Image (cartoon, rainbow over all chains, first blue to last red; front, side, top):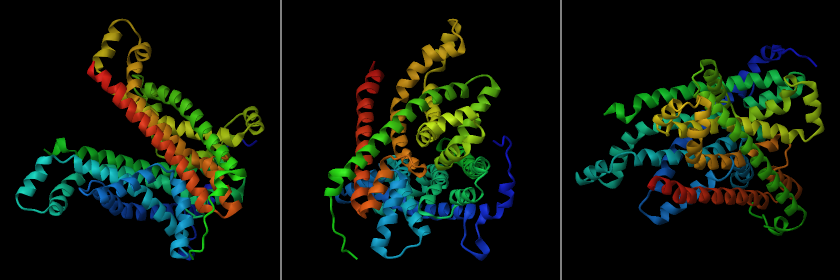
Length: 232
Length: 235
């Protein structure tokens, strides 16, 4: 048993860890992890906004299906959502690239969680604002878009950043359907070299940690800056 | 394209049904073991995090930040593939002779979850008025004894709802154990799919099980909130 760590396996494969075979082949590694996280984050921002607004609609026929969908997704493990997408997307849309399957799964999953943030943000705005805006003659949609959402966004932003941190961690599950993001690259290199699993997994844990911790700190900083108590 | 014929009978009886049931049992066993251990570990880390001893506090903080900011899957792979280099040979031999996949999954889930539980417990403790600690210290209890007899018993009662939710998270997160070959619910659903090509039925079965688990547990939390916490608030 080799008692000492040998991190040369990291430096030998550093570019592969970071961007895969990017300039000459598909993007992989940390680059793909970030691409998946950013793409799903942007999509689930809109998804969460739509789901959140639907789930507090006045109309039962709109509200109940939205709530049912949100609770369905929140009750499932992400892995299950990925398998469902992996299995259903080709049946519905023909051939779909694995990257897009994973982005779809992450978007569906995260939208359900983001919708709760949106609802909490909207509910944090005093009722009086809505009433005042309605009494000036704005329609209820205009009240939502021009008055409530812009203010609610202040409270939502730190939670959105936290959700992005979860997304970065969740992209590691893309490994299971063969998308060559960071965790997949790590298992590939581990399978090829065989002898350095400890070093490899410590290294990628460290990379994930740096990425996530940066955004966790950002969210804490934003929370302090954007909080209502300070703004008032 | 829509030539798929449903065959629900394969998952309601026979061999595949047995697989799914054994998957559910493994999921429950793995989650139960992990949540109990994670609670104990989380309690220790939470107390360390609030300690007045700086190195102890910093260690707890580093622990929390590190394990909350790395993916569970990577931690799982670390314990499964990479732990042999940091463990003594005797422990390794023992682990390989037992159900190593299960042990690695339980370790990863325990440590990952303990970081979240520690934060839940800490916010429970912070909600206990500071005077209680001061009063018990002035009555002659040491810091640890005040925690043990005065603060934690009250804090844990407040922390029960988030803890139960953590159990739900563990049950869902335990699906990742399939990647290292623990035959839990998702693994078995996947297995049934590969044997029968009836993915729709197999995944529906697993989804229904997870949903049922989540509905039962969420209702229990709501019941507890209504019955227990509101009573304590009233008195």
